[in-house]
Amino acid sequence: MAALPSGPRVLLLGAGLAGGLLALALAERGARVTLAGEPAASEGATAVSYGGVPWWGGGADPLGQLQTQAPSAWGALEARHGPLGWRQAELWLHGSRPAGDRLALPHAPVGSWLTASEAREREPLLALPEPLGVLVLPYARIDPLTLLASLERTLPALGVTRCGPLEGPGALDQARRHHDHTVVCAGAHGVRLLQHLGLPLPSGLDHSWAGVLQHRGSALAAERIVMPLQPLRPSREREEVGPTAVLDAGLAPAPGGGVLLGQSSWFGLPLAPPAANADRALLDAAARALLGPQGAAGDGWTLVQRPVAFCRDGRPLVGPIPGAEGVSLFCGFAGPFALVPVLAPLLAEALVSGGLAPLADLGVLPSRLPAR
Ligand SMILES: Cc1cc2nc3c(=O)[nH]c(=O)nc-3n(C[C@H](O)[C@H](O)[C@H](O)COP(=O)(O)OP(=O)(O)OC[C@H]3O[C@@H](n4cnc5c(N)ncnc54)[C@H](O)[C@@H]3O)c2cc1C
Image (spheres, rainbow, N blue to C red):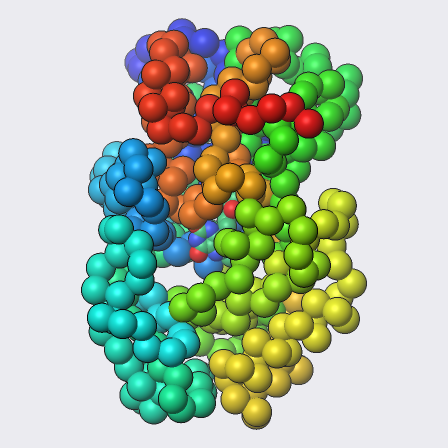
């Protein structure tokens, strides 16, 4: 009979990508884990994500170096726990041809250029006007529904206890008292949970509302994600002020089949989505830009809106909240499908064995930011 875990009792609030992989890492280290959140995280950002793994998308600093290890981290997880949704893919970045067919990122590979008509030959859905084209780069994606379904099967087998979302100050406080550590890994809902727990909010943590249109009857010709060469969302996330909504026209395989047409990002809204007709109007512009005049996003396209957390300095929040005994954060990632698999083991190690030095060296501790 397998020995029961005897490590610290850890409560994870949020069962999406972050909570799921942190639960795995903690259970592997003998922690007694309770994972709170709805089954298969159907309400979260993870379930509708493109799932792209931007392992080469970080900077030259230690965090960017660590991010390059995402493919081997996913490979090791799949070797231990079975398929988690990893797919080789291509990233197609549409726009004007960049010098040297490369991006200004230290770890980015050199790409290859396709003209608009060459791109259409390979991907009949994509109708870009000349002289635009696409820069093709190696990529990978995690199919989010495969990941979430696999975690729902794997985690109980590792001794992780599952329960539904914990809401309200009373229930949250009581649950927190029954555990040695509580980790808020609820994406954009983290701010609300911290408020309910009566804890300080890190000044840079915020969220935007992402909008995509999903079509079950269409499919991309291959496993690929189409995005702009110069996306607007990352720079808007770093500014306190700016447009309320930005559009990064893109296409991706839809979780569970079909195609996603995206992505709108709405800023400065509370935890309620933007008006559906305004979001659809914005996404219609993406349809015209990518699918051509006949591709207007009318019949058969369903609007999906989800809040996505980010941190204004572009770095995630990983580790204890100053002044909040026993409560940590694991949220605010830029490129979570590359960062979460490499950071979850470091946070799990810190919670089970102590020692924050590896997280401090990466510059991800919440203590770097003042409370709001
Ligand atoms: C359209 C779209 C495309 C994207 N594309 C990419 C991409 O290509 N690559 C990439 O890296 N990232 C991408 N992202 C971002 C990425 O999907 C998210 O940042 C990531 O999935 C967030 O994971 P999470 O676990 O932190 O949060 P979530 O997946 O949002 O999970 C948080 C969970 O916490 C739950 N919760 C809320 N309240 C409570 C409570 N009281 N108790 C317990 N649980 C609670 C929520 O219901 C939710 O299920 C995309 C996002 C969107 C929307």
